[in-house]
Every structure is written in C-alpha cells, then in structure tokens.
Length: 165
Image (tube, rainbow, N blue to C red; front, side, top):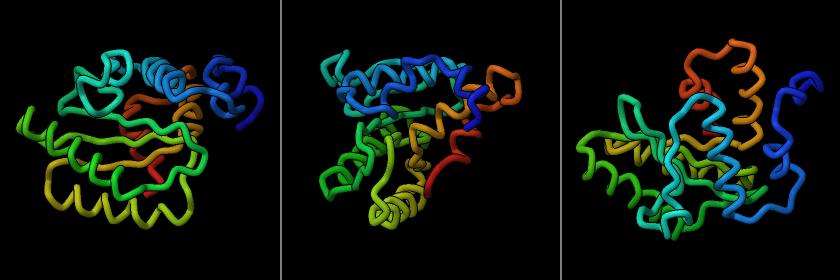
C-alpha cells in the first residue's frame, strides 16, 4: 500500500498489524473498520457477553451477514472452530430462514489452513445455509482509502473479492 493511501487510514486501525492487541480490542477495531466502509455493525461478541456465538453482525442488508474475527497472524482452523462456524451458519439460517454471508476476518491465515477453509466453504455453500469468506484484516483496511476516494460503491462485494478461498 502506498504511503498516501496509508495516510487515509486512521492510526488506530493500523495497531493490529503492528501487534499487541487483545482479542476484544481486535473485535472493536474490526467493527470500526467495517463502519468506516459504510456498514451498520452490531457488536455481538464480548460486549454482549457472547449472547450470540459470532462477534459482529452487519445489519440493514438484503441478507444476514455474520462475522467472526480472529486475532491471529497465522490463524489455523481447528476441528472445534470448524464445528463452531458450521453451528453459527446453522443458527443464523434457522433464525432468518435464509442463507447468510459469513465472513471470517483474521490478521493472517496459516498456509496449511487454506485447504481446510476451502473445504468448509464447499460444505457451507453446498448446504445453502451460508456463503463463506475468509479475509485478511489488512485487505479490509486497504479498502478504506478507496472508499474515502469514492472508488468503492459496493464494499461487501469488495470484501468478498478479498477472500483467500
């Protein structure tokens, strides 16, 4: 990213890339970044004592959009996490009676994890319960300068295009 683009990103949003943020702080920062992209975001994670199992939800869209955030530079999908993500999709599908977009945001992904994420995507997409995307945090914030310059008109589509799977 060019320095003039970095200048358009609030310094707080660069903090996770530099390291040293808690999971709760990362959740807050992801929420801010998504709001700056124009989304109405609701905190459902630690701020509501995990009443819902996912961290954030984007409201006011044509379909539900649920977001789970991972404060890890090399996130690796465990069997337990895989089950949780499938449960999230199932729960939201039963609540809304329509498929949701499910976005996993992490600082980075372990290279061996990508195949597992692709397999999970095939499963979720195949059931019709959810459309699954895995996105690096730095790709989310790289959209902010484009949004500020008026070059982004559908930020959700841009986020989906950033998916590593």
